[in-house]
Length: 221
Ligand SMILES: *Cc1c(COP(=O)(O)O)cnc(C)c1O
Image 1 (cartoon, rainbow, N blue to C red):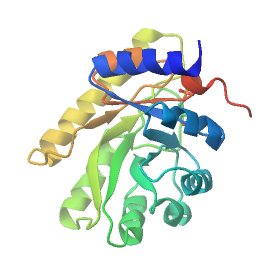
Image 2: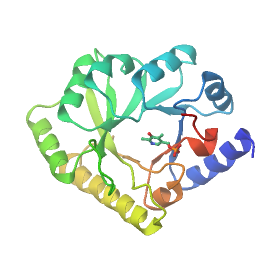
Image 3: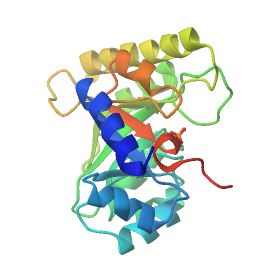
């Protein structure tokens, strides 16, 4: 299939489920991004701060850039001028740094939860997430707005396990909404699903799927 055919089919499938496609363009050159842009795509995802800043400078201003990788605090200033949504809000210190560097802008962020069986240094647990949110109730952020949650399932062929993990993330989303954002209409996003597991994520209520290799082909390392 051509890029256009893949994009059209994927776009239909994702829209039918009521979700939005984020084209994960990390490692791919700007001309590939521009090709997809010319087909109408506006949401793109990157996981390295320098790469996002470099690409944003070369591409149209109406692209909505999503930062989807672990974000170090010393890289925050590189992305704040360009980023539409940070998916990887995984610590209070990071949120405070984003708040400080926002200047007069608003920065939308998702809380990243660790839902996979694999070990990972990043991502909140339900307990650490709750502690973070309690802390924010006491000392709120000025410019950062939390609008949902994000997570990655285990990389496995066991579709039942993946389904269970996505269901868990949806339950976390509901609980956080109920306990902390019940009167906040902006808290709506459930970012889950990648090339290998997005149909399962859509079934479990994903609103944002992050797809790279299925669109652009395998990444070179
Ligand atoms: C790379 C990446 C994706 C896209 O992965 P594919 O398997 O290529 O679709 C999605 N989410 C995150 C956080 C990523 O780092």
